[in-house]
Image (cartoon, rainbow, N blue to C red; front, side, top):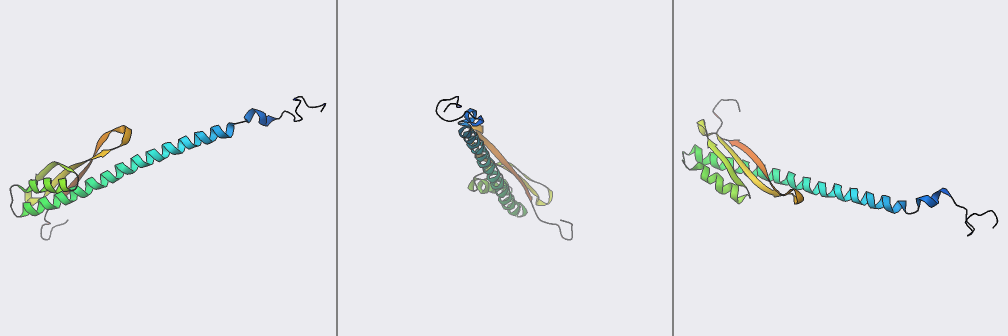
Length: 134
């Protein structure tokens, strides 16, 4: 063909400079989606660990409060064993006036490249005074 500058019968168009760009965009989008997926998994692991810590703290505080109401001087020992059974470590335990108990636990959570971190949970438990406000 006389009017074709390429010699193969096709005219040179704007799309020749964009050959393979769809592949680059697809690879970039796949990378972004992979990063979002990894971040979601790490966030989910952190949330689950936080909920486990809260549940372990609640159970430990209730167990310590039961012992404290009965006058057991080693009530926090019960909290240690309850926290351990729930995959947590008792970090702090105090029995206050009126057998009101405050407990703090820590649950280890592995967050991939961020390493091993700890989720903490705190709880209070104790008897409610008669006629008093909660």
